[in-house]
Each structure stands twice: as structure tokens, then as C-alpha cells.
Length: 217
Image 1: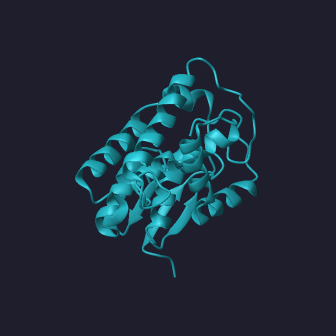
Image 2: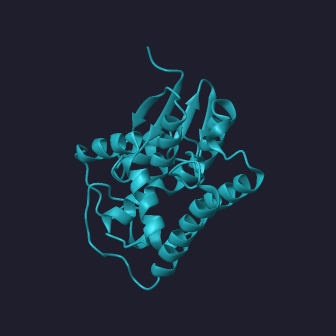
Image 3: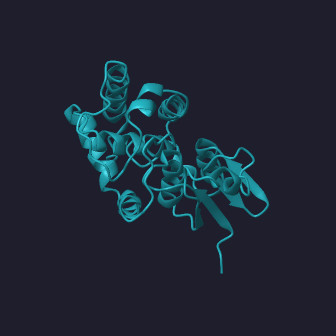
């Protein structure tokens, strides 16, 4: 019997937005069924439109409810299933929301020149002058959050939050392109990488057969 909740995602090797929603749901302990739609094919858009009004993924199906956009899905899961997905402390929660929306709307050069490719390894490819300030901003952000709010665990705010899900694809990018980080940021990246759910996603990406040469997802 299918779960009531269904998450429609793209290729695990490439779909950074799918990873964000998927990882949040897994970390929250929410049971769901996956529907994976291969990206960048002649029928991709048509297939996604069967589930998503935008023609984009991911989209969460909860009975008759459709929730699209990764951050909206994460918020929906937090409200319905797991209040712990945001920090309890008022200041920490405000910062977590701010850096999550910063990721959602920002870092265009990182996205363009260093697309997610979980199983690929391209040392220092894409680390051009336009990208370096964004890498530095992320590293500085990670360090500041860890030092100010991270005493209770290995995540940005100690325990896993939506903010960690938003930056998990960046951790993957930094591994793919061998980005050098300062010690605090590197330790955080390694903690995300070591999550059992992250490892499950990475293992699935390794056995996918599809290849996208210009990943924009």
C-alpha cells in the first residue's frame, strides 16, 4: 500500500532542490513514497506537470494537497510533523530562516558554474573569480552559525534543521569540486556528509544511469 505522502523528485545525482525536501522529510522521520522523474528528457516537463502546477520539482503530495517549492515543502513538514526542524531559540530561529531563504534565492554563480553532480569529481573546476565570494560567504556563514548556535551538536544550530537541508547540496558541490574550507566549515561539511540519510541519497545517485552534461536542476 502506498504511503499517503508522496514526494516527486528528479535525479538524485543532479537535483539539488529535490535533495533539500527529501533530506528534511527523512530527518523528520516522515514516511513517504518517492516518484522519480528523469530530468532533461523530451518528456520531463510533461511528466512533472502531472503532479506540479509549475512544471518543476520537487512537489509533495499529501492527499489532495500539493506543496511545491523545496522550502515550502520543508515548512509544511515542520508544521505538520516536526516542530524541531527550526531552532527553539528566537534569535537562532531567525538566523536559520534568514540563511535558508538566502540559499533559496542567492548564490547564482555557484549554481551556474558548480552544478550539483554527486558522483562526479572535478577538482577546482568552476572556482572562478565570480564564484569565490559566494564560497567565502557560505564558509563564513557556516562558521558563525556553528560558533554561536551549534554547541548542542554537529549541525549549524546544533541539531538538524531546515537550514542544514538547504545547504546539503552545497556540501555535495564542495566535495565534487574539491573546495577548500577553513576547519570549522570543513568539519560541518563532513558532518552533513556522514548523515545516514545523506549517505543513502549519495548511494542512490551512484547507481543512476542518466547523465546530464549541463545540469541546472
